[in-house]
Length: 154
Image 1 (tube, rainbow, N blue to C red):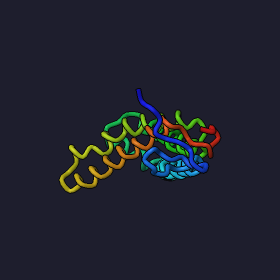
Image 2 (tube, rainbow, N blue to C red):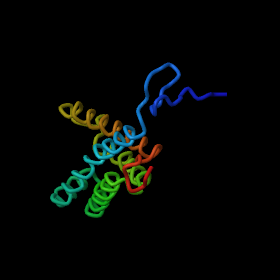
Image 3 (tube, helix red, strand yellow):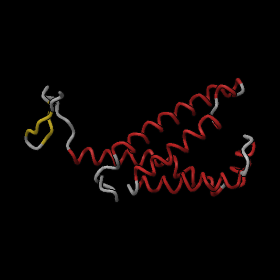
């Protein structure tokens, strides 16, 4: 049976080995900063897809996907809608899950380094790995929620 290795000393959490843990307010501030940083790539990308709708739809079509305009609209809705929800901390777990599923679907389609031209393998590998890392952050948001500084309130 596991026992707690944490205690409170002077209002701070301290593990039994004497290493100070972060305070609740520090964790909540870190959660806010993390949410905003994770969401930023999606919010910026969503606005970019609005501004370059035709180009985005053309790129999606070039990958052999049907209904490129519809998929562009869906991408905008997910990236911008769920991205802004993450920033605000509103329905955070659902927003993180939506973006995570979106990322899982699009990553092998648009960053399949195994099918890339030789001069693009490194670039696509980096983008693929970046998306996997972002997926990790989204899973953490899904698991642990937004923190106190959010509409959801943790």
